[in-house]
Image (spheres, rainbow, N blue to C red):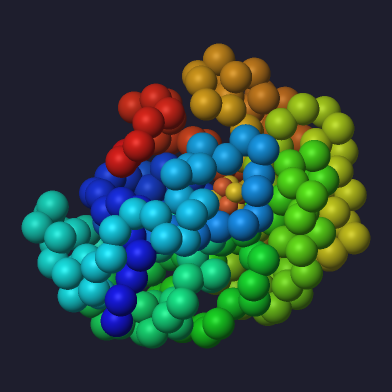
Length: 219
Ligand code: SF4
């Protein structure tokens, strides 16, 4: 199986329901969703990065240390050719696997140890935002899906609450996460989101890796 790898690293999962868990990260190349605040623009070109087989990527990750969790991210992993085969192999090699996706494509499989961190985009983020909400019902049908909404300013928050209602997202599966790449920006927005989560019965996600190490690659 040939993969187009952006980067492989060992860190803690910084976002979503598994925050704080030691994890191997496999970042794939290729994304055409075009988010204006994307912090991984180096993944957009599907021809970028480097080629590696699944076995080579697994060996490189294992050489970094043992981890109970593999996070498959991007880019947009569900746009990557062979993603289903990659996930099937990974489930044989790791105790748990998570996929970070915009949701522009539907979930290709279900498995009791496979989590989807589905991050549909708000209208201010990209012209393609509506496409990232198209498959929310298919994701919601899997109880191992978490909807992780990245929220910036007040209009973003109003859009997020409206879209959660319109798409009838199960609230115990929804996390709001502040947008931002600095401590100050994240904290100011997090305080607002915390109050909203209390009022609306939603959960909140931090950005642990930004807090620990700042906005840089490989963490
Ligand atoms: S979906 Fe993810 S990788 Fe693609 S542009 Fe948006 S934030 Fe960047």
